[in-house]
Amino acid sequence: MTSRFVRVNLGASNPQQNRNSESFQKASQNRLPATFAPRRFYATTEEKMRTKSAIGPFTWKAATVFIGTGIATLIYFDREKKKSIQLREEKKIQEKSKSYGKPKLGGPFKLTNAANNEEFDSESLRGRFHLIYFGFTHCPDICPEELDKMSEVVEATKKDKELGEHALVPIFITCDPRRDTAPIVKEYVKDFHPDLIGLTGSQEEIKKVAKLFRVYVSSPPALSEDDDYLVDHSIFFYLMSPEGVFLDCYSQNATPESVLTSFKKHYQDYVEQGGQVNDTPL
Amino acid sequence: MSALPESSKPPTRAERKHCWKLRDEYFTCLDKISIIDPAIVDKDPSRAEGCLDSKKKYEDGCMASWVEYFNKRRVIDVRQKQYLEFSEKMSGK
Image (cartoon, rainbow over all chains, first blue to last red; front, side, top):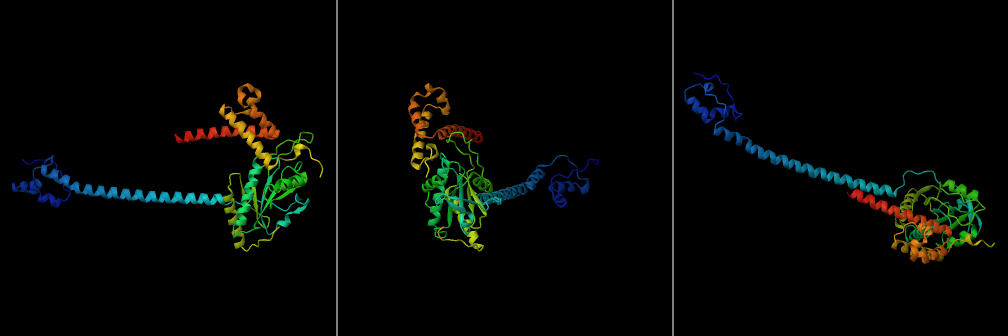
């Protein structure tokens, strides 16, 4: 009686293999045509082993290749990530020492030079880099610290062979003209650096200059009040080019070294572009 | 040169240093008794008996506007430090 079972192809995908199988031979030895070999729903042990071995080496190889590729990919991505992080860090450092776009700070001004009580025209600064600090003589701690920092920067500039003795002119402008008259400012700046120029003026003149530099300055108390008060003001150094163009500003957090580095870069850029620096004493 | 009123003349470098020194001595004393705001001592001197001496020296050696400024700064600086420590702890978690 011929079985009506559907033939199930077990294990081998290659029909050629199928024909050479032992069970197949056995079946054909029964003198039945191949197609009428007894059909089974289960796999013989031999076929099972072949199935296993058929997937066996393939699986191990595939696994190795898979894992190998995976590791290679991980290493590649890790390296690229590290590279991009490094690039980002470098960019950050570069940006910190650069200025973010240049607001139109500064401009021509006329004040009083505390040293000789004569008019001081900003035109006289033409051809020289200058560093301006706004403060007042009754300042408890910040102004003295910042002016000391300024002195350190100027000294370091003088020692630098590329920059030289007169590369940077330090300027102190008072935010408190009511108390800081010329003699007072003269005494004050002597305490910090011999090159430090102290400027003062009338209330209106100082107000005008403060506005040019966008410096916030609080108004002094009413005239009838006591002479003991503090002035609120923004704490920045302003680096100006020999043409009176704003280049950079440095906050309280800036160290003398970072200020010097930044100034040197601006100096070099300026000279490279053909700028003329006046290196005679002011 | 006209005579200028006392408070108009700014402190010299030496005077500044002297004032800072007295301030630091007073504040160290307050640190020891864990008082942050020096204004508390003004309101209730009995809380800082041991520091009253250095307090007087400090207030005599510095301009009134400076004393007020330093006192306020102390409170701000301590609070800022506490806040930074707190936020570091939180980000550490």
